[in-house]
Image (cartoon, rainbow, N blue to C red; front, top):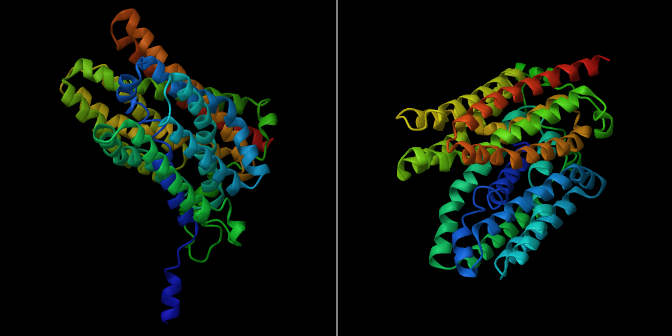
Length: 422
């Protein structure tokens, strides 16, 4: 009887993979995204170059990802997944450690080039490939939990990095962060990571596993995925993939534009209140990503996509009223829920169409398209402000583009179903 009781509490190794994925994204993503400019003032004041020169580091990292993204899945699949990941994690460590040794902008740019290669090869693409391989049941929830780590990691690490910069030195802040990256690489890449269940003689979570009861959720998941086994080369000739690429670029545009929310809020509201709103939508974003994954598993792609697009659309609508008492709070709620559009929804859309075998290559191209849009979005908002001295026109443009994201992806899914039947 005790043996049966112990068996009933058996934990599938997929959840260990999810823990590793969450830890990786919580540490590896913030240094490139939310925390990248935390060092800006200290570095530029110490070394005497401009903030725009320092900001170019982020552009270099993103640009490398755009060109390398489509090749990452091939590299991971063709060679030993775990060894490749661990090698690039070590390269990531060296790149961030190198930041702490830099004396001029060109040395920073060289390190950023290295980090660009390492970042794209250790974060979104390999993480979603693993989740897609390990989870047949609750795949959307697993994806959302992993990417919630990005927000949680930034929230936790931000005060730590700020403390080190202010009370020790910006160089030691980089050195310490590099050490943290190395620890995660050793823990996850050295011990926990397995690219697919077959590596341990297991089946994916929910694939007729006796520890998972049969339920409607698993049946719904099976019907949601079209399981198209089409290479990226073949996909480029099909309308559905072009629509997915268009939707990914537009999704990148609106997510890139959202980076202008903090300065726009600071212009419309007192600085302290604007900071509260930014913190609020980042915190809500953690729960928003989890909610989006649950909705995807429970109700399917259509409902989750409509809700995500609606949240982003309403967020830009709220920015039209940033100077009112209610507009910023509406933004905090809507954008907090809409943050999942930049992380969780794209992997779900890809997995709903492609087979596990074809997923990695397709997602690599779609992720690159997303990054192209992310680079364009801030330019549209900043350019509009420079021309009109107002953000209003930019927010109207983003409302339209947000809606077009949903149209492109849903239309693409419709064409993919036709391709499947053909």
